[in-house]
Structure formats: structure tokens, C-alpha cells
Length: 232
Image (cartoon, rainbow, N blue to C red; front, top):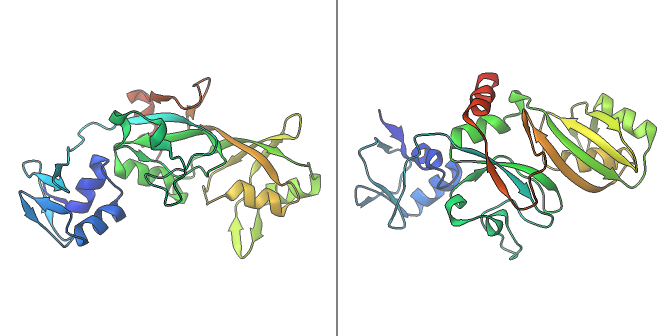
């Protein structure tokens, strides 16, 4: 069975599909020793694909990991400002894994990593409606504002779906969202008069961070992966 070259690279975990297409257009990718410059190429398991002369190893079995992202780390492979990235915290054997969505520089907690580009894409599609649960520490609790967030709001022309918010103690809120829009919780709670001081993700779908130490990574079992696929 033939696979489009960009998808092959993405599924290997070597790069996202967009990054793979950029690599191809810049002449960094070769198939069986011949450099290509168009993403309209197809490969099979018997073909040898290289990026910058390094062989791309196809991944046959989906691997999914949870990582406890530390504070002040970028969810990216390279930061032009030189800030610490999540890959600086990971061993070499995890360098080719793709992150599933992003947590911003100041947000900590559960971040998923996988070698399966298609799974990563499905997990982040808004239509998948996978619940993500966070603990948000706010500067002040504004009841009217929280009720607005629970109903759904529009901020700067962008609509945000209703959030499930449970008040804990010490200005901590348990917030559940299903969209995964960029900086969604910070934007909405700030607009509703409850600016976020700290944000920590504790679960993504059925996967819970639990007591995994900061900066550590743990593989998700196949049963959980199958459950996730079933519900996508």
C-alpha cells in the first residue's frame, strides 16, 4: 500500500505533516537516494526515505506517552528565542515524538506525546470534543464572571464554548474544556474578571496525570489507546 510522503514522515513521528511538506519543498527529503521537491510522491514500506541523509524509521505500532510538563518550557522542537523546550527535558529516545496540542510557556501538567501523526491530529480536532481538565488558580473569584464562562462567551470576536467550572479552595478552580483553543482558559477567565495566575492540566480524556513527577514521562498502555481510538 502506497502512502503520501508527507503522511509517511508524519506517521513516523519525525515531523508534523506541514513541517514534512516544507522539508520536501526545500529539497531535504530523498526517496531511495533521489531527492524530491514535491509532496506529490508516494512510498511503500520497501522504500527508503531520508531527511538530511538520515533514514526515517516507519512506526508500525502506535506509542502514546504522558509527560509532566514543567513550568517555563516551550511546547515546540525549537524556540527562536532560545527558551527551554519540552524536548530539552526528554531523553534522546523521545526526541522524535510529536506533542498532542500545546501547553503554553507558563502552563504545567499533562502533555501527550505520540509517534502517530494521525492520532495526534484526531486528538486535537475540535469535533472530537475530548474533555481536558485543568486546575486554574485565579487572582480573584468573580461569581458573575464564572457564570458567564459557564454559559459560553465571545472574546475579541472568537466564540468559546461553555466551560464546566467547579470552585475548590484558595481561589482554585477545576475547569473542564472540550475545544482546546489557544490559551482558551486564560483568555476566557481574564475576560470574565478572574485572571489566571497558575494553570495546570491534570487530565486529557481518560488519561490522568496522577502523581507522575515533574519532567518525567510514562507510556500509556494499549488498552487505553484502544479506548481513545474507539471514542474518536
